[in-house]
Length: 331
Image (cartoon, rainbow, N blue to C red; front, side):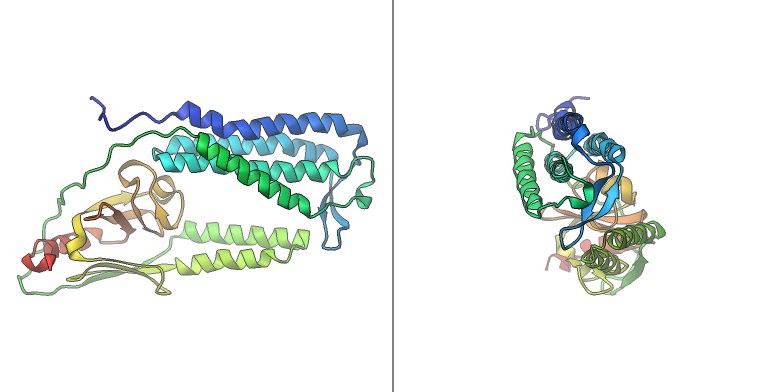
């Protein structure tokens, strides 16, 4: 099959090399510094400082040394997997930039925290807060540079597919409403609980009480996307969160095509909530993904696509097609 002239191949090798460059170089630099500093470092090393600047958390010198290549390996592995999963140029650039920026931030903080302890006993060390600002500044610079250095590729535009749904056998003047509630799946709940408990555990162990706010934010996001109401009527498709925000309304006149699709929340959208698809038929589609399963995919007149996972999607699509074919749908 001939490729469309509007499409070019994803430069996978370029993206992987660029994404791996920063964590790989930082790993080698970190190991070299550790070797040079080894005899000057206390054992154990201080790994946390309280609000007063005093060291109150300690880890063995060997464990901290092992963290240097472990961080690099983790970021490289994540970058390779995610890059190979996306065909979207913008997403590829963001992945490269994110890998470079976040790894820079972590490595600068880690090596600075180790470096300030040279020639000292760990309890006597102090870690100046301005190192965090330096790490953040360097991370932004490196991330922007990586983003600009990322080679782009073109993706052939997807033409809306004609709707294959059969209209429902209802009268020309009848008004039918279809509505369903959707609750988030168990995996979404489990991931939320694990993340929130993990943050709370770190907060307690490190006495970083501000992290309770982060745990509350995670719980709040889950509550927003705990459930939605999906409705199809003569006005089109409406999707509303249980807390009334976010919400989406697609009028019948804005519907070019509608069809039933099978959605894998993690494989197609990388998670749960209001997400952007990054692979296959659902690449570029936005929508409410609270669980995996059957869903509605709508191609909009403006070129966008909206998706929602909901039971009995076929009936919803058929009703939407019924209203779309009515003469007054363009009004």
